[in-house]
Image (tube, rainbow, N blue to C red):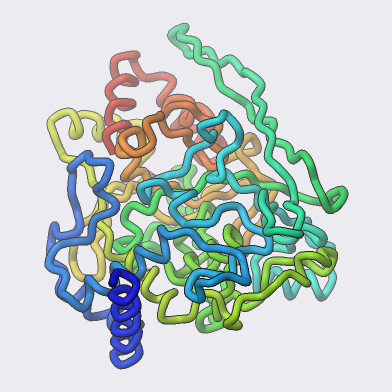
Length: 464
């Protein structure tokens, strides 16, 4: 009976999506009826990011549940008895989306066994040699993939296909002394790859190690207008505050046009739908109409010859749209503005953090949100450089990381969040002390605060 019910639900939702066009439905119907506060909650509940926003109609809830099922239920390798979820791999990191986004929050650095977590991915690329092929790749993909291993090192392979490699984590301690004599110890990462099954990496390869971002507020970030984000751009630093802020203009796989990037660590993706498709392909080896090819390179014979799923596309458009709809419709955590919050915010502003971690935006439907990001690129200095170019983002430039939702991490994962793109920072103070480049002045200002002010600021950040 359960299988019959699920089949009928999928069939009815598919018909609904086709008849109403989900793209239009998502872009207008859902958010047009959303009013102030329906999305936002200050409830520090580990299940908050799993919940839909209020006032969802029966039709919307059916789509939400369909998207949720494809986000959470494991995919399997082909050939299999199921036709809806086969197609895993041939190369992959995880078999579900939620493996890297536990509770729809931020990923962890370590697994329960103490190894590198599946949430930590190794993105691979090489420097451009200036050839026409590389120029074309830079325009269309934003980077040049590593020739043998492709865009990402996969830690798993289906039966008969060797995994590509494993991540090894080591750190070197670096001592930092504050002007008032306080001493803190940073961990300088020495991430490497081991057990490479397809030979040595290209001599000019760059490997960027990245922790999966929190999915908090993805729908609301989609609803900030380009104009509002670009208002904060100051590429030439004309106001002489030391902060530039640069938009990352990226090529959309949906319409082939240049659009403002706002998702991923380097703002290299413009829409949530494309980000879902990219993660499905890079992390699980699933094809979509946006990424129709398996993630094998021409050097990986077993991968290329692995059994294919029954359908040409693993995630057809109506299911990809449903997953996107699910993520857009989730509740968003936003901190309660207590007396302590307001005190911390004043110090946050005094130090200068707010120049990049902008505290407030209004969405296109007039809702005030507080993601604490400007969604622009900033030079973070040589120490944080990952050596990877993505469209207009240089090797040392990163999107300002949104801070909202980090307060839920410990609730969800039962461990403190490892901060920055590669998880090197064990707490907020370490994250601040790694800031360089444009953010150097803010770091120095923080180090010069009185100790009690530093404590207030750190508590403020913990609550976001």
